[in-house]
Length: 470
Image 1 (cartoon, helix red, strand yellow):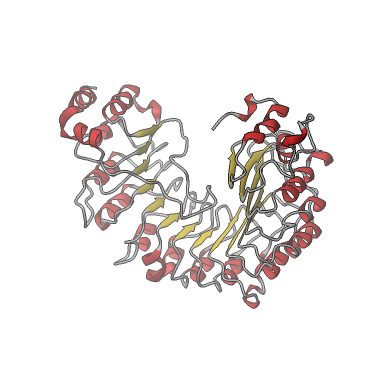
Image 2 (tube, helix red, strand yellow):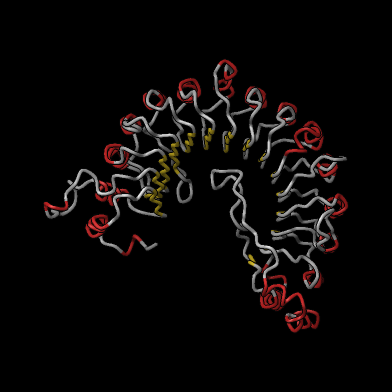
């Protein structure tokens, strides 16, 4: 592990001369695309001694994950030519300036992908982190040319292809018969028509993500639901998705992850999910679904449903009150992650209810919560801090709150619980599901460790006494 920016361009290319020829996985957080090209190709960069020259400096790479300044035709072509054993290619860029023709991806670059035919996973994403920009030099022809070489692909993730229409995306669905994971982000021209005849394909999708595809409606989800093996469905910021879509989702008995942030669903729609889906669902996010009220929890935890749920995001729903948390605590569901950020009507009563919550198995006070996000909850006062002393919330490892609430109390809590990661500036806790491009990724939370046990047994009383004095 090292900082690529500290290495001179030509020196970085020489660095790979000492790399093992058996290296199979390479992941770099950030590297300029020019350095990628020079590192892979022995014909570029400064002259190298003749004995060191070989066809490729790292020929055995099978998985390559890079974050670059620009994804370019030259870089993609060099990767395809030099890394003939590649089965996993993940490229992400985040331009700070609008790319010019020489520093961008075009139809020609897409045509060079997967020349060896071994690629199983492909991810090409243009991030909007610094600039609202897209792959403006790629259209339907580019995806048609790429799809011809991707018949064995199992996972495809494309983000920022604003000029690609249903024609290009349909080529992927109809020519990649082995596809199991499909993730499309910022598909500004993607409509319901791309899924119109999906039932005529042999696809058996298990993971579908359609984030920021605002032209999609309920009809697209109805068609997608023909894939009865779906386990992950991400429809975040698809603003035209509503209750009719949830009726179709209600038939997916294997669904484990459902992300509906910013959609147009209501309390009634959640009832449509039915007990079949809620019995299998592990992660549910309904963040910023502003039509929801306290009744949504009754729909989720009705009878025996919702018992498998481990991660629940209720953030930025202005109509939620403490009654939601009281009902959640009463259900005794062993949730490990609960996000309630920016819910203005959540108060100290919710903290009290969660602290007193016991699950059916284990008997821990504070249930099994490992992550609790209360940032921006205006009803939380300094009085809530007394509920974070022993024996409450013994497994809590991530805690989000408004830092200006009371700095002294925050500092005292941090001293008394050194294993508690506290976020006081609004940052997201841990890794949000789905952002890792795998909705099933979970934190490996430890049980109460030895030092934490000492604190719980009394070693941390001093700081808690300070908190109470405050």
